[in-house]
Length: 195
Length: 195
Image 1 (tube, rainbow over the protein chains, first blue to last red):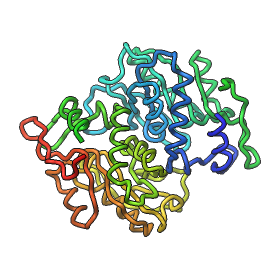
Image 2 (tube, rainbow over the protein chains, first blue to last red; image 1 turned 180 degrees about the horizontal axis):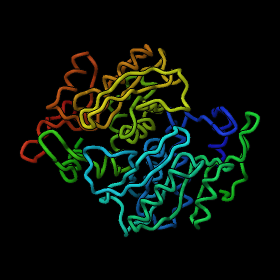
Image 3 (cartoon, chains in turn brown, yellow; image 1 turned 120 degrees about the horizontal axis):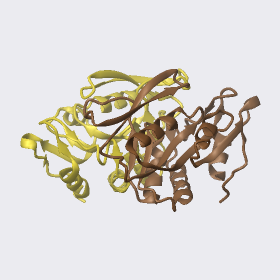
Image 4 (tube, rainbow over the protein chains, first blue to last red; image 1 turned 135 degrees about the vertical axis):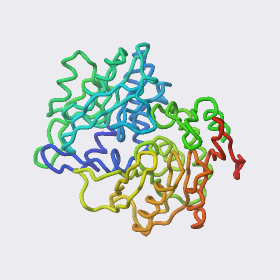
């Protein structure tokens, strides 16, 4: 997705060979117009997949999911990173390790909102080691829901997450797939899906 | 806002005289179409306030803020509830006590994204004891930014937060203001702003 890649090149900050900081438009300050374009792009790529629900994870997955929800005409469910006292025990839970934050969180989704009738699109802001998406896939498995695929804003294709998930036969659509962050420069893979 | 009040009456669950659960459309599963209407409503109410930025707090403030950001044509910044290792020390911080969760969190906003040139609209999903909004106002004070006002999806008007903030001379627009949750029934205050 050219608009997104241009934004990454212009406003992303390469902090190391592994870390790209995009907190000026994606995960601290958010550019709503870009999110709308991203949501439309996910909608276009998955419009024939029979999706009934979008599943994401707090917090940075919520913004792009909202606009995909508008385009696809379906509700968005976000997994919480730990139990809230106002949620009951009626939960699917899984564990997600964050290498960035150096911690493991329980994630939870109410059984009220995902079930075996659902065909679900998972959306997240980043795909690196794949832990968050694997946790969400585990939730869908517990719910006996169908997985339509995974929509990722920025994949770090030089890290193992994308392969781990695609090897399971799951469709992964990344709007920008980074090949390398070496020498302070962002290099992208060619897009598999051209629009 | 009639659409929102109808949704609260139809889908909200009164768990006690103080607790209204709206996790089927606002803070776990999210209805994107309702969020879009809410964003448009905030946009209409604050369109002449010279807003340059929206400030909210993760996670449930993000969805309505996105659509307000589209309508007002401004970026959205969300305060994080604790430091992320990928953020630098270049932060405004404050403390927010959550009575629901029984815990106190540091909130932080990068100094890169709010400054003295900004006129800021604060948006959040709930206003009850007002702790989150007071924390965000503290951030704006540290940034020497101008506060345009506060947009709240659901105010629990029988709790002290709304008064605490309005007493400071700050404009608070609540799209649904709850007078009482007694006897398992949601009763609203009359709207001050009619559209």
